Length: 116
Image (cartoon, rainbow, N blue to C red; front, side, top):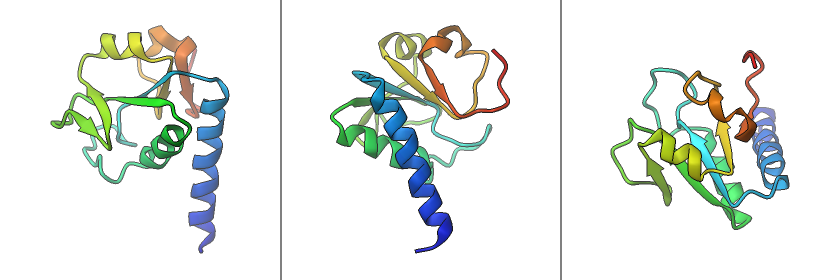
């Protein structure tokens, strides 16, 4: 196994462990793509994190207005951001955006460049 694959698995394990430690009932995944403007949902790195969280019995939901399906890997897809924010105990975001900053206390991100 390559060092990159190993590092990616370790990073996903760490992120999932940090989320699970907070004991949320529902974890929301805010957007599936890693880059703004992308529509590559199937290759999203978040899938591995979702799988690990679900394995602990925690419900995972997704906010992705660009996705046509109602489910993404058996997780309900929300297109209504306000409903998504309300129901989620924790929200995992790749990049912190203005539309999600109002629930900063629920956010888990590794975005080093956001400003509070």
